[in-house]
Length: 204
Image (cartoon, rainbow, N blue to C red; front, side):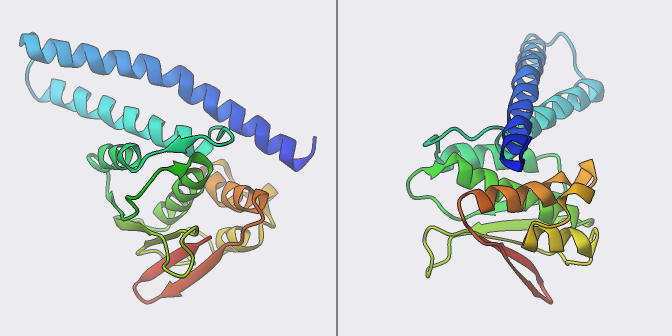
């Protein structure tokens, strides 16, 4: 099986897993809301369950785009993107500053951005804010920035992002470092890493 077919199969598997998980998690979320409205259950335990289910739902929606199959021509509006990121930041150490607001985006573009976010998150153990912008000199490009360094979690992972080489040695927890250069290369794009004292920017 060639690399393109392997990537397609992995995306189909990701889509299937997220599709099968989102329905039961959503049903639990709706059930908790009904119990809360009826006053059947109250207290910190219910709050913990509610927060956990909301966090799981947001994470699945995010991962469905990051690792699922992006259909040709499929669009995602900024409102949906911001909704996912806002829900995801509610219970996490990472917050998101999404700047682009005009028009809709190709789902494949958002997949690349979400994968870049996951790469930065892995290098931000203390958390922080990740910002997404579109550069003035390249309105079709993306810049994803955060307080990260290329020596975390391992410098070879960032070499994989830049070159696409060494993907076969990447562990499951860091699969985003192997997948990001693969999906960018499919559209003949290039990835640039810019590191400063304030953090790291992934451009593509």
